[in-house]
Image (cartoon, rainbow, N blue to C red; front, side, top):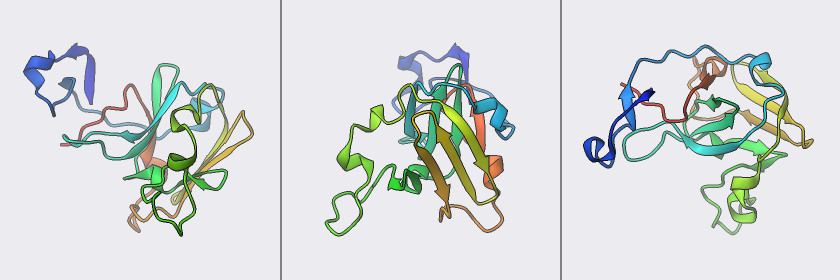
Length: 163
């Protein structure tokens, strides 16, 4: 994870490098008390980093932290009130349409707050002050021995690197 206090000048890091010196990061699983009541400032469907692009983790910027759902391409499995959050195949005529095609996705969560979250080994759900619900269940990116509870955590940045 980047140490935000030790930035690397752009001319030294290259086009695909980390923005800051990297330090080890072992997150603790998020608890409902860590998240409930916090405003969502912005969100990304591309948290994480893999050099040329992100890992496709779902990330919500809260006050001073990011809530990360560390499932590869999580937004493709996430549903906001039953609608695919990021529909990678939005151009298929016979598919249910996700938000990428229908709405300004940047504004989907702006100024919303989490009112409840629920985590299990195979699913994540959250209720929002807008009355909407966000859910991820049965993501194929999860292996049979994965536990999603360990993959939902707070981080100081959405830029996460792996060794």
